[in-house]
Length: 453
Image (cartoon, rainbow, N blue to C red; front, side, top):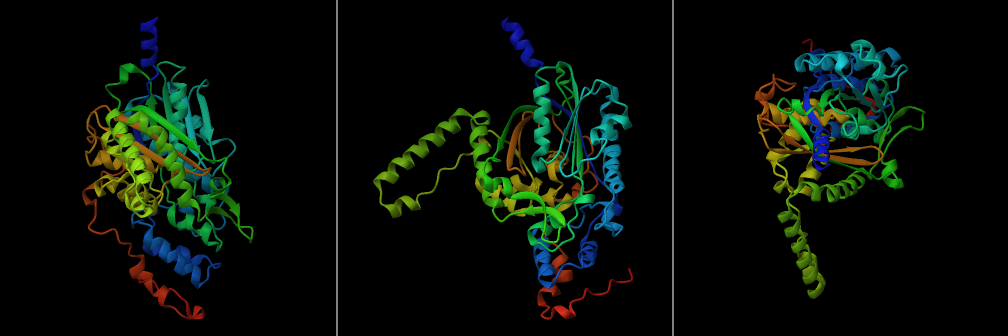
């Protein structure tokens, strides 16, 4: 009975065999020039809104090489069609899933579980049905279609697979994560909703997972633990990220000013739960002793002295080698860095991913992982902590163990990794369109003529 219990547990492990981050074609690159043209097309914006967008783009940490949906380059972002969103998803599916299955040597009919998450899109037939039809998956494949989960949906999908692997032995799972930008472009002037146009970019990732112990030697990562935190019961957390309509009836994604506070609260609660699962006992004991000592002396000392003593900080580096942070924005990366006392070396993968690919929603974690792999940082035995946030409000995190040295296979970073990190992350938008801040008379506002080149 003891052996059966141990043997059954070994079949419940969750291994990441491979993953493929989507790299759109170069004709979809959204550089400074193109961004200016897209902004100029929105006739609902006034001078103050242009200035606001300028500041947002310049401070976002996003570079010149990110990708947008084709509908933007065709000038049809205000009038999307059903075919636009289907074409956007098909381009991603056919590229990433095809490459992943070909490289892994796994036939489509071997897939037992399919999990797809695209938050702001719902088609009939569903996106999973689109994949099943194209790749001819088996009739008994177990399908899960997640929507409305936001940027944390990727780890939610992994958690679904993790739980399924506890029931079914020797199974393969295909997880597909992306976001549909074509039908969700906001064409109004509400500042809390137009921010999404500046931050989100096209991207996606397909992952192949298994619980076959015979394939452990081929696997890249092994899932150690996963923790989900949901603050949807709090009104402030629930309303801080919301899809809604503005006063003119234009649909968009609202980002509330309370978002930083809500995200911090969710992060603290999540880390409080996952810390005992991933950190060594000695670090937990050290933190407890230091906290007790500080609490004791705070009662003994005066108020001024108590306030000057620093808060004890738990050292996550004692149990984590690499930090895979959601690229929600420069402020998100900076905030997590301060909270966990991380160095610039720790934050580099997230910063470079934001600069090169932007915020690709739930798939951004895998671009960050790809950067670490391309830089050959991931060695056998290393532990990688993934952290993501999503509407609702959710904070999810998980810990992976690296099963072999990684970096030999190519990925979305291969052709540009030699140029990262760049000498400067400054956005040229300010240099090109900084004159917006000097314009005093809105009636004379006009973009300079584009050069013939």
